[in-house]
Image (tube, rainbow, N blue to C red; front, side, top):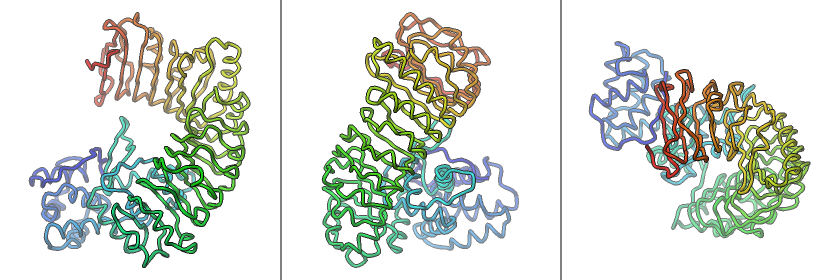
Length: 544
């Protein structure tokens, strides 16, 4: 059984023989002495071929973890490497590890050749691009996102990608591609015309000889416009992905990209409204990222993009979505700024799973009521911005919001933030039930609501900002059965020292406590678990 890889970086220099053995055996068997007797000799022979290089050791260990524990099978792996110089050995090991992958994982890995060296790749963003490209195989009973995340984790376990950010629960949020792996997959992608990468200071005429075979175009330079201008309409019709990592003036002939599935122009501030004319003609588009551009409005016919699954508009100047947006029946992820006004009939978007952000001040009560129809919703971020002196208005919105939230049976993550001058105290006396909720963030409320209690049996992540915490409030939190992370901020300087009982927070792995006075604090009678990290902060954020 392959043991999980938690580290995000590997040292470059060779390891000693003893450290090489430890890394190799722990990766495959989980301990220094877990190697069966019949495999010890061949293991030493394999380690000699690695010459102490940590990346080579981990790569081969990942392969051998799936090989039967028979000496002759391990000898076959050993013989496939052969005798060569250290550099040649490494290339053979990497090639062997790539060809050992299932076909769908090979495709997923090759896609990473679009990213620059040392680029931090967000897991969620990557998985949804894989889905848009059709790389993720359908598995009965499992959502495509779940299958995609499993593919991501498998590449981590096989040491083909390296963790960059690992959460308290072991979830890898982002990754990097080791430069040797990147060199390998870029070489393979170029040979089979899987991806064409236009680097900085590179002449776009290099692509002229095989431009009709370009399927995915990633540009890390500012001359993509020249390249696209040189290509005919027929050439453009073959391109499935365009991804920008640099300044770009625009995408010529946008309507001619009839096969385009992924268009990512995120962070290209030069992109304005006229650059996305004919966007609605990209009928196959599934993934559209216009975040941090200068776009201020979408085409009125945005509903022509009937297959669109992800739309990211965060950080751009859009204040209102077209009425036709609600007819995007396949939309699963809609990411916008806090100030965006939605069409009232959002309940028509039955496939929606992630919605960031929803502002109560920008949208009607009808819109809030329509949220109840989005029964597939899993991630929802809300900004509550009705002034506290508007009592009747606050109550109407609160009642509608609570009613809608109680219908979202699949909700896993909920964040509610008040804007300045507002309070969430209207949520204190309500009745909320969250059977599937795993993450809850409440920006500010005077006390811990009674509906946050042990009945939230799936809750693993909780962030609260409150005026004061009383013993009975803390006791309810202590009994949350699966809580792994707790961040608790107290704004009232009169709070006193609190004690966590010996049975409290039994699963807690990480906590952060923020308060105003030195007399406030928490005392743990017993450490919750071996992996517990207790982080305490004062109001000046001075770690104690």
